[in-house]
Amino acid sequence: MNRSKIVLGLWPLAGVTTIGVTPEDAEQTIAAAIEGGITAFDTAYSYGFEGESDRLLGSFIGSNRERYRVMGKVGQRWSLDRQRVVDGSKQQLLKDAEESLRRMKLDYFDVLFLHAPDPNVALEESAAAMEQMRHQGWCRKIGICNITAEQLHAFSRHAQV
Image (cartoon, helix red, strand yellow):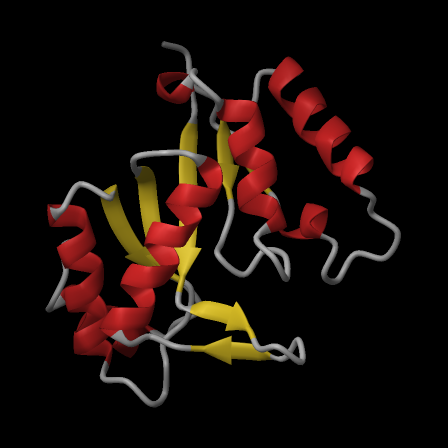
């Protein structure tokens, strides 16, 4: 299977920070990307106030899962008043991953990232939760975003990145 080296990030298509993006624009963008040979996509639990990115991507993947690489992120969400919330607790990470997979109608992520360290949760706890999801088959690989070198070192001590 020929897989693209280019990854389409879906954050702008979710309509949170990009003014004027319609659902039709988002659909046309993903369709054009697939037509152009892109098979790798970056989404996140928080890409959209209601999971728009996950749902949109899932509608394109359908029964062709083996053709695509899906990279997701967990641990960041929106409050009811649409404020960004970081929650790296084990319970929330598991809940976010499960919900993202359900939204996309997928069984696993190719790569699942901790979106950002939670200053209120030990990084070791978040890393252990990510590792648990990998062992459960929810993702093939794990990683972490938005960190310092020191945080990467701490995360790596408790998870195989």
